[in-house]
Image 1 (cartoon, rainbow, N blue to C red):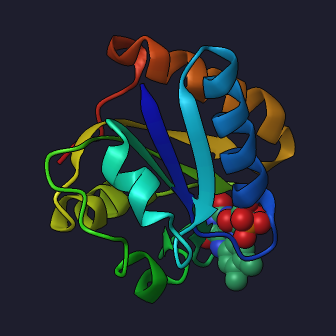
Image 2 (spheres, rainbow, N blue to C red):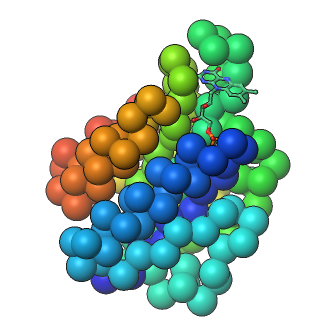
Length: 145
Ligand SMILES: Cc1cc2nc3c(=O)[nH]c(=O)nc-3n(C[C@H](O)[C@H](O)[C@H](O)COP(=O)(O)O)c2cc1C
């Protein structure tokens, strides 16, 4: 199976998480590539059965949270009907970022199977947990609509 991990990152945490997630998937036998949302390998993406989309949380820490740089995420290539898992990295409180990211992904045609918020003080542990949950997708919490 092939997978593409697409991320939007300002200071590097979400990029690190994306790279770790791709690495974890490869260790489980999935051919996975991670790329920033504005430099997606379209050939790889078109051959992927699984897409993972990650963003950072932008807001006023306890309210007004939204996916970071949404104009970049809005340019996510069309992923009609592809199984998609989403994640975010955050400092204190992700608010409703996963719900908002789910909306962005669905507008690009992705079929969201679930999402997970990774706290920035444990990117390594959070990425490993996310990979485990994606591989047993019933363990990945559904994002409320
Ligand atoms: C401008 C700005 C606003 C942020 N707002 C929030 C917030 O509202 N809630 C939160 O939990 N984290 C917030 N954060 C923390 C980031 O979401 C967190 O550090 C994230 O891991 C950054 O990912 P990145 O390194 O990929 O850009 C904010 C960070 C920045 C730079």
